Image (cartoon, rainbow, N blue to C red):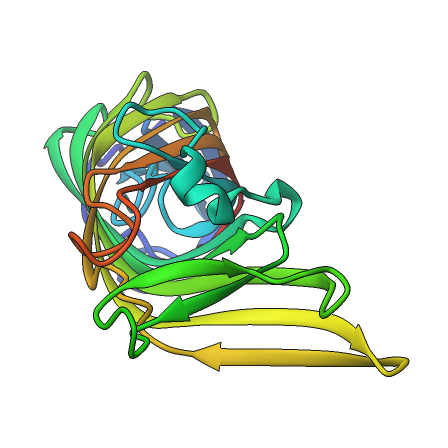
Length: 271
């Protein structure tokens, strides 16, 4: 080798004193070694930093979460009692779809430890197993939401659910076992704040040999601002998650004292 130059700067041919006719590259860890052979058979050596663009790498929030919604009482039991039997669930229709649209990671120690923040929209459905009408703010019971059983002979629901939409913002502490996202196990825990942006009941039943669909939009005395405890664990892009409502589904003294729980899987990463 007749000459050697090791630099962090630009190594493009336009900035070399001789015309380059051949280039070889060797990868050493995070460094890229470039061998440039000129027309005089002399070789220059240049170093190029191969540090990753870590703005969004090795984060595990943005994507689609799909889960099952459960309702539990203050003792964390799914048996809500005889007074709340109208809330007995059809779990096949109690699904959660969470679109985690944006994320940002505040790195505390490289990619091993960081604070995760972001945002998204969630749609939570609570399928009602029994033949019930959801009544909200009636003349007999203002500022209250409850269920009224409907005889099967009068109306037999084939679909009956309460659906709630939220904007949500996470604040979580995340740990990774490796800075390489292809080899990293990850775990995160924290809270998710929510703002209710819509709620409705959807029903489907047969009447006079015709299928009838009803959708009623109301606030149903649901808690407008929510807090959930949340945990996420996984490997690469495969993530299991769970959330537990600190705030009840309905506002205090305006509905049953029940708390939402969601268990699911995040399997479509964005970005």
